[in-house]
Structures are given as structure tokens and as C-alpha cells.
Image (cartoon, rainbow, N blue to C red; front, side, top):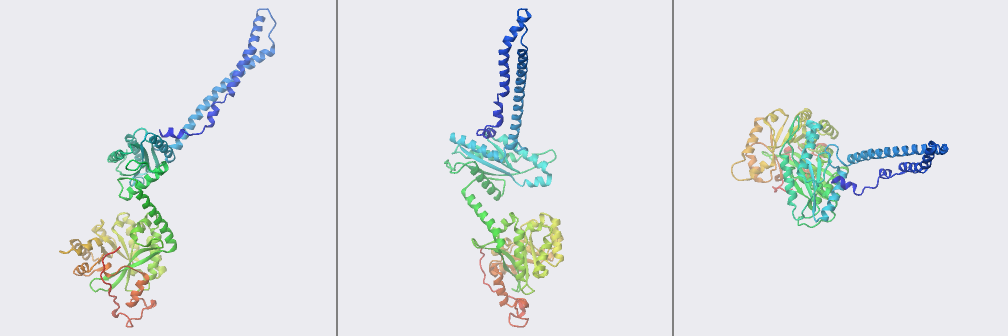
Length: 561
């Protein structure tokens, strides 16, 4: 069906006119006419001569007769050869057209041909009063198949998937491979019954429960599906629903299915388009903001719970966007990771933070968070040390925080990176402890200097009753491994009082104040006498806070975004 749609408006090709070329046949026909004209009289004279009743035929007429015979044979043979050549060239042209419009691996339509096939089917469905659904399919985590088992295994999976799709789809439904592991099909349905498309997609998901059994291995995969229709849920035709628009909307619905966790399907909703526009705005803004230096470090105080003394800060990323205002990292960091800019963004922030922290008292530490993407870079440790040298910031005052998810991607590379940093004096913290899958063996063998309790566990201390058994277990584990503990997310005085009864800990959270930018931190430290001498701090014993301890003076606050 899809191929027929491609030929409906195809212009006349040169072979068609060649097939109608009657020159060769005309030569043969003219020779036949001359043969009849000259041969009639010549044969009569030849018979009379044989019977002795006349003279010999004219030699010129005999030669003309022979020439007519030769031309007739030549013209007929040339016409036969021409028709055979046209037939062969037509077959070659058909093969070339098929190659241009189909995927050579799966024999499905390709992206370009799918547009024409979709539009042709949409017009026919519209004439019959039917709606059309464009379904886009993407295999989840298919890249791992190619990476682990090779592209031959991946190709085998794609061929088997196409066969399963063909078994489910009616014969009139075009099926296309849009590229890589992305496929699409279009199907008409009654406008008031979109659930029929749902039923078919559900059967597709059920078919995926059967593993892909290849000669050398068995593969289990899931898929995500995005669907767009040219009618709304109540059966009214939507505007601007040509083939290109349907493909674009199905792609947005597919992206939404991926974002929501994969292995599911969604129909297109206009809110998805607004969400993607906002994401595009964020991507553009991140790229522009990096060039303009709009990303700045903020700092959250880290306090010794027992003494109340300020012992350091954790650097937090903030984006001072001219259009969006102050943007939190929960919004822009995941996008920066996806578009490959997290390393550049992080290094820009670290360079600013090292320069600002260099002015602090040497007793204060700086903690920075490292993305799992950065730890995949074998040169990360060298680049971080280079930033420290350029800023003149002592490595022993730096604390690098990594999450448990980093320990499961490439443990050999992570171990080498952490060891390289620790050899230069940088301390390593395991952040958000308890939310991942780190083992006791990893805690014992990897060079950690501190454990940070995730804020979700710390919040349990707000509830009345016995203390959280999870926090007590983590603290006991830290003592047994000789690893100091930091509690993050300390948001009110109730939590703080509970932590004080658990022993000597470091804590950070809104109970000590909101994160501040570098200028506000410098003013705070200057007032407390906690700036380095070269940054304007008076020597010990001069004006300032005696003993050099900076007490947390902010009033308790509730957690805010």
C-alpha cells in the first residue's frame, strides 16, 4: 500500500517515452511495405522468366528486394532488443526505487517514504470518515544490545521486532523504520473509538513480554510508544494534521513516555508541546548562560552539631538567568547532563568557588558535588587538580562528594579517580548514603573520608517517638569504619536537637540559614573574623570573634525550594 502511494503522482520517466519509440518498428514496417511494392512485380517477372515467357528481372529491383528483406530483419531485431532493454532497465529502476524508499535491513519504509504513505492513507481515511493514528515506537536501552553483544545481535532484534509488528498490524497499515531502533506505523480508526488503537498497542506490549531468542543469546527488551491522532478525543478533526505534523506530535508523545519512565505509551497532548518548548528554552539558555557566566556558586553552611561552630560550606549551583530569574539545580543540571555540558558547567562553577574560598580562613572546608557523568571521564582528576593549582586553593580543604549511583557504572575507573584525588590531599564523601546500593565492601575498600546521610532519613527525626533506626544504624556503621558523618537537610530545631543526642556530627540545612552567594558569605566571614589575612582579616587577637569560631546566628527556617 505504501509503495503504491509513492507512484500516484510520479512524473513520466524517460523509459516510458522510450517504450513508445516506433522508429525501430517503423523501419521494419517501411521495409515490409517496400517489399510488398517491389516484390509483387519482381516475383511476377521472375515466374514469367522461369516459364520462358518474359525477360530476366531487373537487377536493381532484385537488389531493392534484398535490401528490403535486410531492413525488415534489422528493424524487427532492433525492436525486440529495445523492448528487452526497456524491460531490464524498468526492473533496475524498480529495484532502485525500492532501495530509495525502504530500509534494507527490515524491508520497512524509510522516513521519507513514510511521509508520503501517511499522507495518502490519511486522505483515504478522511474520505471514508475515519481518523488516523500515527504511532511511533522506540526500544528502551537498545544501545546496550549493540555495545554488549555487537551490532549483528542488534540487527537480529530489529528484524524480529518488525516481524512481530507485521503480525499485529492489518495489511493496509504502513510500517516504517525511521532510524536506529525507532519505528512507526499509521492506522485508521473510528473517530469516536480511539481505544481500538490502545488495544492494539497493548497487544504490542504483550508481545514484547516474549524474549527475543537469537541463535547465540536471548534478549529481553521493553519499548516506549507515542501516539498522535488527527482527531481529538471527542472525535473532532484537529487543525494542521498533515503527515509531518502527526509525526512531530507522535515524537513529542514518545519523548514524554521516555521521560515518564519508559515501557509505556502516551497520546499526544498540547501540554507536551509547551513542555518541550520550555525545555528548548532551557537548553538554549544553558548554552548562552555558560558563555555569559550566568552560573554562580552559592554556599550552604556546614556546622559542628556539638559546638555550633562553622566548619565549612557546600557549594551549590545556581543559574542567574535574565529571563527566568534564579534557577535551582534540580531544573538545569539534568538537562546539562543530557546535552553534554555538565562538565563545562561544573568546572566553571568550581573555578569561581575556588577563587572565592581562597579568601576564607584556612580552617574552613569547601565541599563540591560531582556528577556521575564527570566520573566517567578518565581525565577528570587531572582537570580538577589543575583548577585547584590555577586558583591557589589547597587540596586538603576540598571535599568531593559523589553519590552511590557512581559506584555501579565503572567501579575500576571510579576507584582510580578517587585514589588519584586522595593522593593529592582531596577528601572524598559518599553523598546521599542509604538511597543507593553501595555495599559494605565498597565502603571498606574505596577511599572515603566521610558519609553524608540523605535528607529523607534526616526528616524522620522530626516525628515524635523513638529515633530513626536507620540513622542510628548509619551512625553506628560510620563509627565502626571510622568515617565521620554529615547530616543534610536539617530544617528545624526539632531535628537539630535529635542529632545532638546522636554524637558528634556535622550538619547542614535551612535551620542554619539559606544558601548564600559568594559576596554574602564573604561579608558573613568578615564580620566573624574568618577571612584569610590576605583577604582583610585582622590577625589573631585583633578585633573579631575570639577563638576564631563562627557561630551560626540565623534563626530556624522551614525548608523552601
